[in-house]
Amino acid sequence: MHLAIHHETVYRYASPVKRSTQYLRLTPVDTPHQKVLSWALDLPAQASRCLDAYGNVMHVLSMDQPHSEIHLFARGVVETLDAPPAPDPQDGRFPPAVFLRDSPLTQADAALRAFAASHAEAVAAQPLQGLLGLMHALAQHMPYTPGTTDAATPAAEAFERRLGVCQDHAQVFATCARLLGVPTRYVSGYLATDAEHVASHAWAEARLPGTAEQGGGWLGFDVSNQCLADARYVRLAIGLDYLDACPVRGMRLGGGIEAMQAAVQVTLASAQTQA
Image 1: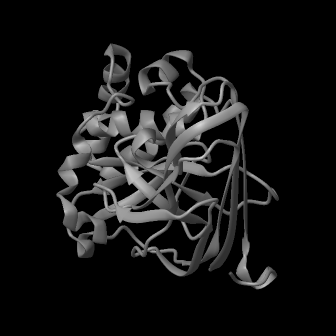
Image 2: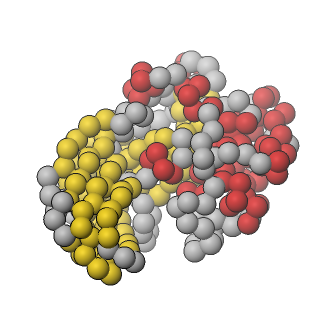
């Protein structure tokens, strides 16, 4: 499947920002499940490109002149595949066990530990089926509910509220799976849907045990949509939690109240001109 992606993000400020720095993880990389055919960023100033600690492509955008708006555009075409779990090129930076660690947004409390423990036997016996059961149970416990959490909401808090969005689902799933000894990472990216304009998406990838021949490798679990990641998904970045992998994260001096608007369009590439 060839997916054409157009992602626009606009920040507006109540008063001029004196200077700002944005860390952009808006560029996908090749994986066993996707191949980047073309990709371009349209930014308001020159940005430096590097790889972050997790092997994600990151651009650092610094604006030293006063500004009241920041417009960020990312677009391109990615070929995606329906493929079984597989090792990942980014594994070479460090072992999967790194994703057994918790983080400020994925620290477990007693309630999350008890919930995870209730799935321990199933995951130990049949990892894939056990993790699917965990995914379905989480969706029932905390239905997808926009506007109830924000980027700073920890997994334990979202679980306690019994509400959340895709980033909360991904973080809670990762927290539980790690408690059960399964390396799991937070993923930001895109999902092709019937909606014309949506936001970027998030899900979790768990490292199933065994070799590739034995069905081992990374597999995506989308709690919000109650499914495994397939050819409709394009991965942008990975990390321990939202803060590691979010498409845009930055800091600024001045500006007052900030308003952010983001729109994503994902369509079959044959339906529009490729970037």
